[in-house]
Structure formats: C-alpha cells, structure tokens
Length: 213
Image 1 (cartoon, rainbow, N blue to C red):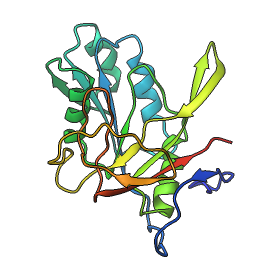
Image 2: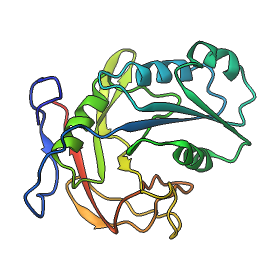
Image 3: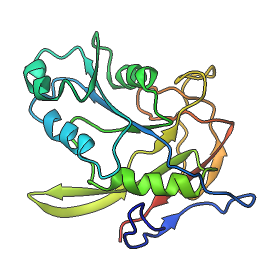
Image 4: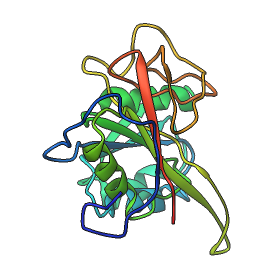
C-alpha cells in the first residue's frame, strides 16, 4: 500500500474484497479519543503525537475520567486545539464510551494517555481506508520502546468505523477478539471493561492491519 504522500508501500494483512471496489475520492475522517485518569505526567506527549499527525485528525478528544491531579494545568496549552470531555470517574470503558459519543469523525481511534502515535499512523490508516472502503476495522503495528530503543512489536488497538446513528449499538458490548485479515460477526458498538469493541456499519466486520517495514 502506498501512503497518501507517495511514501514506500507497506505490506497489508487483509481479507480479499468480496467484490470489485472503487477507492474513495477522499480519505475518511478520524477522531482520536484519549481517555485520561491521573495521567498529568504523560498525557501531554500523547496529545502532541495526536496533533502532530502528518494526516490531520478531524478532532482530538480528551476525556477526563474524574482526575484529581494537575490535568487542567497540563491541558492548558492545548485547549484551543482539543475537545475536552469531563465526567465522574467510572473507569476506562466508560471514558471510551464518553469519547465515542462526543466524536464526529467517520473512524474512531483510541490513544492511551501514556502512549504516543507514530507521526504517520493516521496517514497510513487513511490510505488504507481510502483504498479499501469495505473495511470497518483497521490497525497498524505497535512498537514497544524502552530507553529509546525498540523492545518489541504487537498489533495495536483497532481503529473502528463509527455507526451512523450512535457510538453505542443496541446489543451491548462484545468481548470477542479478531485477528487482522479475518472477518467475523460483531454484536456491539460499545466498550466494556476488559475489551475494546468498535462500532461497525453491519453485522459483518472486516479487519485489516498495516505491517511495519
């Protein structure tokens, strides 16, 4: 797959399309949700990585899940560039749901408050979503960095297409996991404790992953 700006092609693990596809004329929009609780020491780096994407996010939403630390002071330099959602502490799943409800982008991307995106992550995902409009969940590799050195890789959390009516569907939260390159039935558009189910347009969801070079 070639990036939006013509960078080298990256391998993609994805199911074959069921029919001939016509690429989108423009890439879809992405909302980045950063659930935050007592993360004043790390969240600034997360926000900077979200705002610094080569493919600009539609919006960056920070959800304050009842933090009692110095979060307001840390967020102050970013306030004109982010959306802030405040709620009583209810745990990570409820913070994700609050962010999903506030989001208006076509795809929902999750960024932990102690994590950071590669500057080209959304660019790579946007290119894939544009080329394969049949995909509802897309993701990339994640790198584990310790003391400035890569210590391992894994599949990152999926970026899911939002449903047309609501971030949370009527069937409750699903805890089923799927491997990239597969298809499966997803019965939920909500998040539950211990899982990260993403919303989908239909009961059948195709998942694809961009593999790092």
